[in-house]
Image (cartoon, rainbow, N blue to C red; front, side):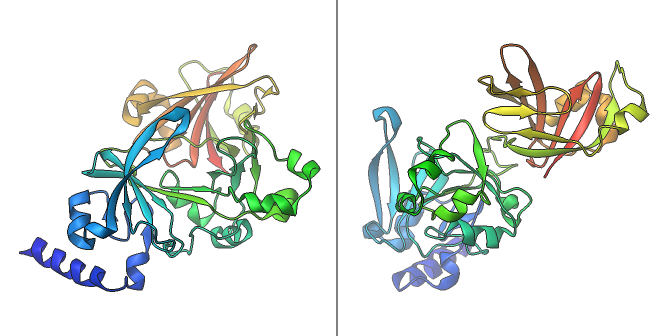
Length: 329
């Protein structure tokens, strides 16, 4: 009876205009009527067949994928659902319509400067003139950082190119480097959000896949000796407060600089508890996570192992037998 009652209420609401609260996006939780447990059949029951259609969309390398489109052709309300289990379990939703918004006010069409105000901080985004240009790579310490891995945004507003010269565009063109939103050229360009995805696979859910976000500046805040250590506590303390900087093209630290050398970067996902069991001496760093990413940054002449935790705000790097705890700036 409880389920029937819920369906009846929802059908009544969606038979008329959507109420304001039903247009809310809660990254990792819901987009209007869509949650991680909502099937296509549920949506047809709620909205009717005319508002729920299947469509094949083009993917890179001539691939195609069948998605479910809600409110097709409605520029204000259209959504596209990408499925983990086809038509049973949603994985993500692309926000096409402009009326959907997060509690903070993020929606397609807002500008880079507006998002800085909402985030209460600058953020970082990928360079331009490649397939994934203008994608947010880090929300930094802003209020939107709680949505890391759940809110994906691209400022790929090509009309904004007309606000800057070709020479200025050249300074932010890169497929291997990201830029701060407070970059002078990006501020002048002030592009708008044209692509926005909500991911339901949040930490702790069955379908969650941790995607490490390591780009940015990291401050060394603590350190502890491992099994074999070449430093004493006084030497370890001299590194506290120093910065490690990682972009898509370089890794710069007080220990090793891998810069302008065609940096390659890959990672492996591991359970945190297993890593902790194998490294019991790091317990004093007071780390908490479900999952870690073991990131390997390498050039032809050197490499670095960088452990990032799934809060995307904490990491650990080992050097000379010392494990240094890092915090994203």
